[in-house]
Amino acid sequence: MRGIDDWPETGAEVTGTFRFEGRRNRKIAVVSIRYKDECGLYHTGQFRGDIYSSIYNISMGDMIKVQYDPARPDRYWSDECGLPVQTSFFLFLAVAAAALIFVLITSGN
Image 1 (cartoon, rainbow, N blue to C red):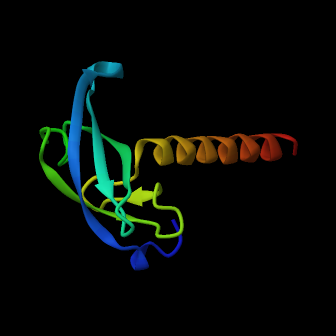
Image 2 (cartoon, rainbow, N blue to C red; image 1 turned 60 degrees about the horizontal axis):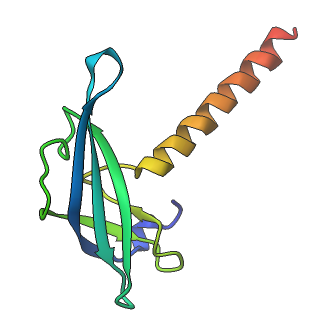
């Protein structure tokens, strides 16, 4: 997400919402969006948030602001929504891998 401050901002339309109950009765919403880049091409994505997130009660047709990478317009970010679903998952995997490596290194001493 390097250089995100320089990414162009555009409006993204909420094209779908799905709410469900996760682990430990945690209420989750997955919000699908569609936005247009500066070339006029449409891109889609998703954000995920819990009941305390500003996106939990968002509805189809609502608009949110997103920033996208002009070199790769399918990469996007929103201050309102945080990290996209797929980025959050990869970030979780990276942290879990780093923790596992740390445990393996420190347990060998």
